[in-house]
Length: 581
Image (cartoon, rainbow, N blue to C red; front, side, top):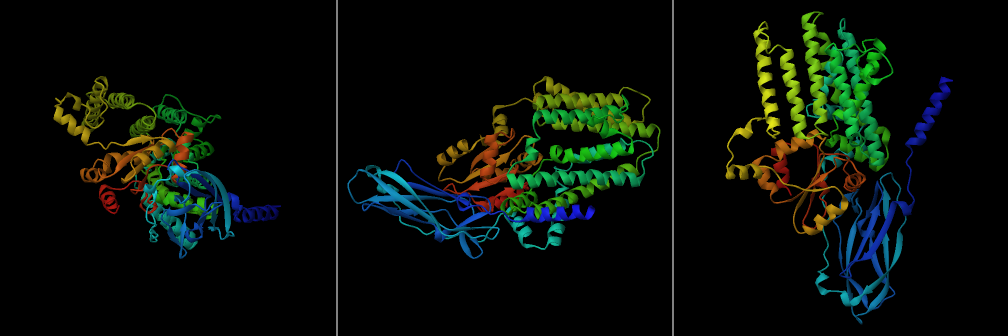
């Protein structure tokens, strides 16, 4: 029976991994229409993993002797296997000239083209005809420019595309080892930091008698569950263009998950002892062997999707590879390897939490309380994504004041070190509370509102913040692209729940040298916080699997694909990147 099941699995995997080729009318969808200046706007919509040869795209007018095509404005092609091709859906502007009477003429435009699939299938030459009614009286000579031949771009690729190519051309062991290294580097970013107190708290919550071996086992369970979540979410995003992590940033999901941390924290304070009923919260903190493993696995799975929803170049590269080739197996293996790399430091943290956990007694009670406070802090940190800044400040103030009282800020019979920490925490938290009452929301300098503000100082303060024009749909963005044609444009994909996005704003965009250089660009911000259908369509159009991502446009509003940035970039690196545009 086992052999039969294995055979069925292998056969299913074999057929599932076989490439699925599109029909020609699905791979290439040509369009043609007239604009107000009687120019023909022709385009070829390409499916994922489809490209079309530049020299095979041709246009011909039939059923007319007076109208002719005198200029074709083409997008820039790229080198692909020694051929000039369009990897993204190209759009062409055809300018016409009329040598006859200035009346309305029905003409037939024939669009011919030929292309291939990345999976190895090349289609036969195709063509499609369109009937257009041209009002010759509206044809303007201003629209006619000398016919130009744009040089194709060199084989310059963005970091994301380079990583995608690495997967498609490299040895499988090299790929897995490379992505393991990417994961280790990502472990040093803010995306993973929130998971450190979570895994530490989970290990501590197991209670007395936890061995180092057991702590290691639970840490591995947490990391494996996290890796499975990243892999599943990544494969789905690559295949369907959806961002599962973004979908889980719904306020009600955040509220629920935050409540889980509050419940776990209260159990650590000794308000109650969680057992093993059916509810997920009880599983999270159960001290029983089975429940503990199940709870840790659940927390690892959800933490990957909700706590750390960051997109970086390695992740985006794997998603691009999956989207273009449909090879979910190799792409998923790369994502799993990257997730393990991200989780290795977390395993070390979990083992440390178990190894150095004090023996039962007063110290154990104190350590458990500290992690209870950290769990409450994580709950508030999560609520930051969906509540107003002043509400977040109030919650942090109440948490800090309550923690200071718990640690004995008003108790004279307390160790001097513990007393000092409690006093500092109380003073800072009290200042946060006063700042909240004053209507301020500055967590770093809560009493800054007390300083006298001059007009000039206010002006300087405002000028330090980069101003973006926000959009949430393709229509809004297209309108801005048309309005600012002739200028360089920077499009920043942002979300309130994106940790790396905030790091970009606070560290990189606030740098004075970066701001001076960014002043040369029209700055647009695509806000995808709510993950509405319009926001999903906007992300999908530009191949963005999640924020942060920065896309640049040239003066002709063409996307500079090779200059796209995915993930956080330090000010010095970002400034160097801007200087290449």
